Length: 269
Image (cartoon, rainbow, N blue to C red; front, side, top):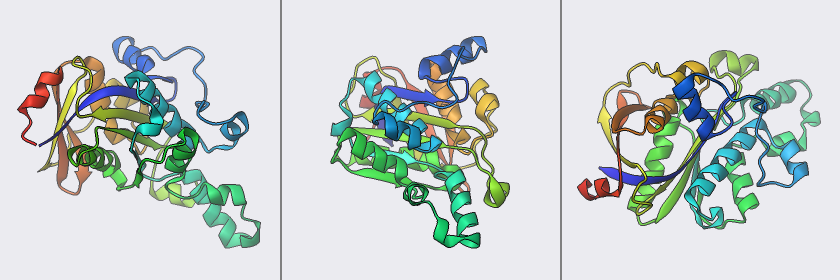
């Protein structure tokens, strides 16, 4: 059994530009008024904010929000960035341009085509020298990212940042791997956070996750990172809960949410 306290949460979806907006949406069904089309990551200088891909913008936004909620200095934290597809739009552009006019590939888009673009911007923006990990595992990307963060805690890290994100898929590749809109979530996980923060316990087991039908899943369920939404819905309710997250063929990451730091004592590390 692996476990962590959740010190901070970040969230971004269309019409829901913060974790508080997501919680309000679950309670009232109302989207935030005047929500921006995409976040403007304050971590970066203004010229970089405009040029970064949407996927990088949402990843940085939720990661920084989780750090602020926890009162943690981002530069001190190891980080795990999970994404199913990276930036699908740039992948589509690269494939199309290389097939038609390879000499015209944009250096900027080439630079942003790598899967660890978001984690790279994060370490540069925060001036962090801590380890940064980029993970992709198709539908299991969030669960595998969470598992990686929990394992880093079990290996001795005091706190780890997890950020998960995906964007819009288009072009021929997008017809094979579907994803609509922007969606991102982040968790600041620690071994000994505030006494009042929820505790997350997790273990890998055989199984298949049940269909997701919560408010966030109905709102943003067409995004490739939607498998993370049942966990965020459970966190929003603030009550003990059990969630099964897709972790690979025939496997789920079984997650239990418990209130308070005392729940950490029940973990056999």
